[in-house]
Amino acid sequence: MTNPAAERYSRQVLLKEWGEAGQRALSEAHFVVIGAGGIGSPALLALAEAGRITVIDSDTVDETNLPRQILHIPARIGMNKAESAKRMLSDITPDVPVTAVAERADDALLARLLDEKSILLDCSDNFKTRHTANRAAHAARRPLVTACAVRFSFQIAVFDFSRHPSPCYQCTFPEDEEKDVKAAQTGVSGPVTAIAGMFAAQEAIKLVLGVKGLDGKLLIGDTLTMKFDVMGLSADPACSVCAK
Image (cartoon, rainbow, N blue to C red):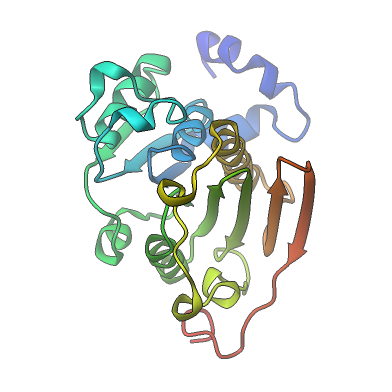
């Protein structure tokens, strides 16, 4: 690392699980993040100290976003969220390349964006996009970190399709059996989205560093009771995605 980079990242390089080799690996990684909202904003802030970033979001900033979507400011109300996120991240870490994609994440877009260095983070707010991310990551054999939050609770799951057979999101949450519960309908706590986003970023970083994480597991957190559970996930032998 150059001297300025060595100084900037000196605290994390001190970690034995991280080190200079880990920092180099992170600088070469490509984090593809779906959603620059309540979960995506903190995740992107954490990942901006790591590697190359592509942020995907077709939505625009509005006033109701500002209490929890911390990459956006009042002056950018009406701006595309991916572009707003890129501007903020470029101010914070000018040396980290950020690409803004002002489109809805679909199969074709993700197939085009996911390269051999990619880790996909699904920080969206709907089941349809989560299933799209799951199919794309499985098809590309790239790791997937998926995070969601509603009211005072959050969930994080990790599926590393790059290394070994793995259960997938469809195995646990079949697409035809779900109800789409959105924060816009039920409400959500800002700190909970921040926790979910930071946890998602940490899991993505651990995948790059080769540190054991939540691969094949689901973390459920309730911040009202402060109870946290980790569940092992099983592959569905009849899964329409990963059993092919």
